[in-house]
Image (cartoon, rainbow, N blue to C red):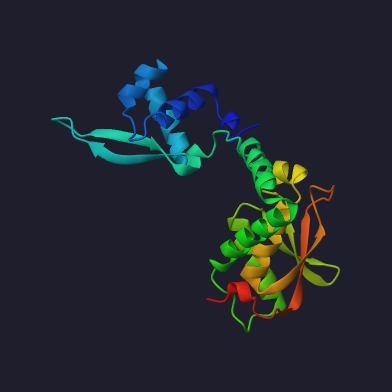
Length: 220
C-alpha cells in the first residue's frame, strides 16, 4: 500500500489535482476539478495541511482580494508510489555488464564512502555509545529507520527499513554501499551481523570500539 492509499478517495483526488499544478491551485479551481463544494475542499485542505502534505503558498493577485493558493509539499509528493526498484535493478544489470562483478563492488564502496564523508564528523573524544547513537541517527535520516540498541551488553545498530530492499535481493553489492557509508561516517570498522534480505528480523551492525586508521581514499 502506498502512502496515498491511506487517504480517503476525495483527498486522493485533491492530492492528484495539486500534483499536476506545480505553482499551486485555488479553492475555486479545485472545486471545479473535483466537483465538490467549496466547504468540502476547505475541510480536506485543512486536514492535509495538518499532516504536512499541503501548504499555503503566496497569494495570487486577482484585481481585488488576493486569491489563496494551495500547493503540495515534498512530503505530500512522497506519498505517490515511485517504482525505484525496477529502474535501479536495471541500472545494476547495466553496470555489471560494463564493469564486471569486482568493479561493481568497488563502485558501490566508493559511492558509500563518498556519501559518508559528507556527514559531520563525530567528535574524536566520543564514546563508543555516542558513536553508535550518532551513526544510527545519520542512518535514520536516510530512511533506514535505524536505532541504537543494547544487544548482548554491546551497543549496536538495528535498521528496520532496507532502503534498497528489492534491489538487494538480486544484487548483494548494495550492502557494500551501506558498510562503506557507515565506515566513512563513523571512522569505525562496521560488521554486518544480521541482514533483512537474508531472512533476519533487521539489519544489525556492530562497530569496532576503536577508530580505524585513516583511509587513503578519504584523504584530500
